[in-house]
Amino acid sequence: MEIVSILLYIILFLSTLLSLLKKQKNGIHFKKFKLPPGSMGWPYVGETLQLYSQDPNIFFLTKQKRYGEIFKTHILGCPCVMLASPEAARFVLVTHAHLFKPTYPKSKERLIGPHALFFHRGGYHARLRRLVQNSLAPQTIKKLIPDIQGIAVSTLESWAASGQVVNTFYEMKKLPFDVGILSIFGHIERGFREMLEENYRKVDKGYNSFPTNIPGTAYQQAILARKRLNRILGEIISSRKEKRLLEKDMLGHFLSFKDENDQKLSDEQIADNIIGVLFAAQDTTASVITWVLKFLHDDPKLLEAVKAEQMAIYDANNGGKMPLTWEQTRSMPLTHRVVMESLRMASIISFTFREAVVDVDYKGYLIPKGWKVMPLFRNIHHNPEFFPNPQEFDPSRFEVRGCEFKKWYSIWAIPSASTRTPSQILEGTKAVTIMMFGL
Image 1 (cartoon, rainbow, N blue to C red):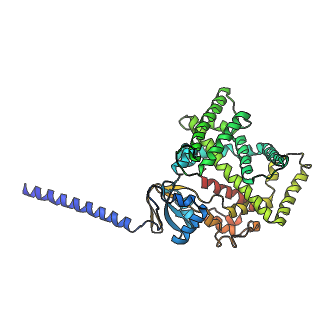
Image 2 (image 1 turned 90 degrees about the vertical axis):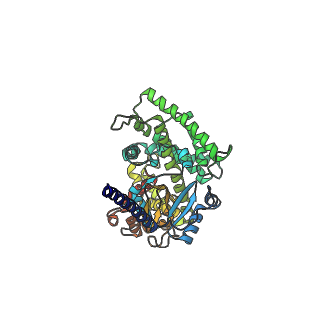
Image 3 (image 1 turned 135 degrees about the horizontal axis):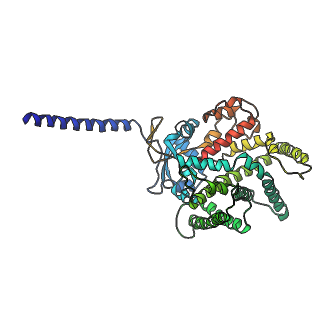
């Protein structure tokens, strides 16, 4: 018995010792990784007030100058790690994307809807992404070009008829919204379109406001408008189901979809993804067009060159009497370069949200599981290593193969960038933009 007792004590001792060694090893493992430098601000609110009290780009740039390419903060109710280098962006979005998931703060997720595809990963995300891409495939868009042209012409004519100075960005937000509604619903009843626009405007206004449920605030008004949007979209979906219409628009694709288990999308899933698509398309498009106009205004010679390119197509269409064609939209090299340079200069997508799904080591720093991670794209677009004289608006930098853009492209691991033509580069940039949104 004594021998048995001694053996039991030895086994227990060794078991305890091994357990302590394992804990110590784990402790050493995590000690060699430290949190990035930075400030977490005040309890609960973090540095959200500082973020909203100034230009966000200045807020992030100031932090970068103080702490370097990686730093921590606490904004919008979330602990965050900010990454301000091309290598870091590539780490999060490309080479180690499996360690992160697309995410937004809960305050923003509530306004878009929890079923929107860019809040998910895995099978659901992949299925919805293919569904959205198929509904916006070139074959579909080609058929919409005359209608899109009609919306643009109508918008321009309304400005001329008003005889007043217009707010460019505000007016430009109407244009992509109308095109988005056309792409999603086709030719929808005017009453539904007006109700959608009225409530979406309130959601849009509250999206970047301080998240609080205090009555009368922009965020609380946005929450109420989002609930009304659910009811409106529910009516549209029910009407489409009752009529059994097999439309080829995005709503038609959503309604006809079935997964491998023969399950259809719920009305809530459809509504959230409709709002998500409108959100992803509207502000970005409106911002780009506004900046394009601004940059062209600042360079009269470039403006005249772009006008000449467009007038050549106008004349080829019998003075505008014939509709614009898909092929013609692909034959505007100077216009495309101006758009590309506007995207770079303006950096309308300053950053994106990801969330670490495990503890991640990046250059000796620990990014804890559950923390938000935000690559800062503006720093890439204005990096002189990739774009000489980055503060200069120069569309010609996208003219030739092997230009500075090739270096930028290598960050995203796009193969054979040096052999791509400007039009192929344009397509690649669209793909990168889609990746940023998680679409």
